Amino acid sequence: MKKFFYFVLAAYAACLGIVGCSRNTGAPTISFGDSATEALVDAGGSKEVLVTIKADAKLKEVRYFKKRVNGEEVPSKSITKFSNPKKFESTITLRDITSDVVLVVEAVDRKNRTTTAEFLVKTGSQPAVQTNALLGFNMLNTLGSSYSVSQSKVLLLPEAKQAQQDVDFMFFYGKVNGVTVAAPASSMVTRVFNNSSYGVQTWSNRNETRLVKVNLDYETASAEDITNALSGATTSVVNHMSNDNTVAFQTASGQVGLIKVFNVGPHSASTLNINVRTI
Image (cartoon, rainbow, N blue to C red):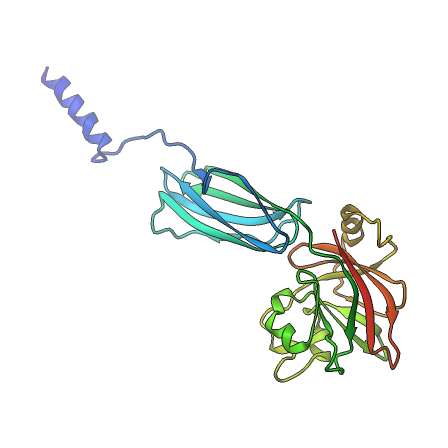
């Protein structure tokens, strides 16, 4: 009887952690706010997503990233330090949503078990199509050279600096490159728009819009057509533009669309009239 009593006592002590006890814990669990797994926002809007992760075996790493519906991934963020490794909670804000996007969350516990969950954010109405947008060469102070797709707006250089996170391409003219549109991230743009107060070299955010001249129909081309045309393209500058040229673009936020040139102005191509269509 005494042997049996000591055996039970030893087992009980083990499960209290005095000796050590093997527990059948499960993989991490991931939940979103009110348990919904998708939401609808207006194009250009933001969405806050509350993420709660529980891990009985304690968290080793949490990763999250955005994924376009077409499969393109936006660089991920990794978290490896936790104030409470058994429960992680954070609000992730998705900003400037101009096309459907998926928030992907991955949790890895200390037993290397991984759980993945997705939250879909759909866009409602697309940004308004901009017609007859008039851009001026940077030497003209009365016309803006910068264009924001999400705002459907031409911006003067001081305005562009204030809204630099929304500036997707800029127009200028040069004797060698002719009529040009280029992303703020282009080194060419930094040289051209060099101003001690508002110049692009003073910006902390310079968007890497992809731009490529294409033979697509401006009115009827689909998002798939544009994505295919941009496939493999790494260019952020389009030179020697002229009337009736069409340029495909993809902004840093993933929005795709087309630029249609319908008038290159006089006086050393000092102005550029374009239509901009987003898909």
